[in-house]
Length: 227
Length: 316
Image (cartoon, helix red, strand yellow):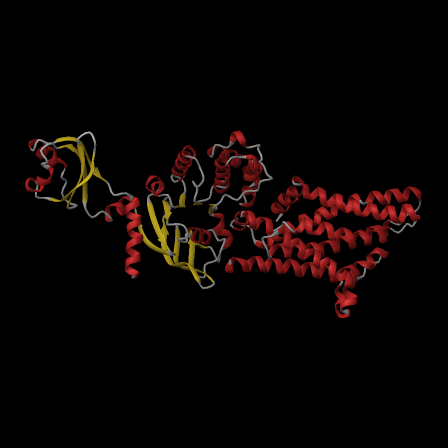
């Protein structure tokens, strides 16, 4: 698993994809920082992360996940991976963790804003760290779904569109159907931004991630027999 | 040793490979021969565990590829068709990655990678990005990826497609060299390749095996008549009456009337007799001057076309 993780992470930063993802995240984050903190003097880092999650993840998750399996399938390098003595589980987890690491890197960089705020006043480090934990969990959930989307097609654009749709539809959810509004990932993230770790939300996000990862593994295994 | 037992692969209602069985012994170089779309790649993908057979069993050195996947895959080095590679990596990075994937131990990795790069002649380009390499080099990188980790079995899917003649000769020499230490299966639709490199040929057509033999035997088996091609100067037109002097001759046919006064004939006889000696004795006595005399060999090409055609007729 570590071998694949290492190679995938390297590939992110050998191509522009890794830099674009990090750059986009920071661009979105900085925009909200400017709009709220600088223009209105409002200091609510939790809220900043919430807004970034809503718009930023929409941009960076598809970029990170669309290539995962679709590109390998299209280029045929999938054959190299799947005929190596590595298990499908190790391959899927390696790729998943590499994408999560890119999100983690951007989160660490975003600590700059905490430092800036601390310079002018007292910011609560615990709240920020809890928010980041929530952001990471939310990112993992979104990435696992994107990974699944990438595993079902050899077209990266289709994989990206499925992922974007998945992230956008919840925006309109309460209007469309109230029954489904309970499974909105963004709502699960909400409490983290107040500095609260809700076990319910934590478990929900983790189990969603686990489910998508498992479905990806099963799907890749099944493909061997039907392909 | 590779055992393929009653393997069938179906894609929906289409049967790509239909109940095939064969064995490859240790150290053999086996050519998998067939027209495009015969099921060569499907079979290779099944042997390497990339796809699962619908029915049947594939055993690599005693390990079933479906049941003991990991152990069986460790025995195999695979170079897929169309040479898939990670273009963003350098040659060395790629080969190292393949070594890591195949569980080559950390201490031995550097040495193993250097050895394989040397074997495949990639030392000079090892720091180059794969993206920037020519087709021939990409092919070698792919081959290096298959060789790294010293697998017992090496499977090459159309290893010489898209190469220039010089590169083809080089790759063939390399494969021959590999055959000394490894079991090699290669697929191709180029027949001369098989007669040059392989000790055994498996001919496959429309998902079925139609022959398994050595290239020489196949050539012999499919040969029905002995043909001799002669070019002669025959001012008195005596060639027509040659049958009277040599009764073993079955037929004489003029192939070509050259403008310089010579004519080319094709003489056939039963497979058992060699007419060459008699022709040398008889023709001068008939005032015929021999310019050229040559036994025609039936090639693997003939064998191949014949085998495929006979199977078609059987069906009818």
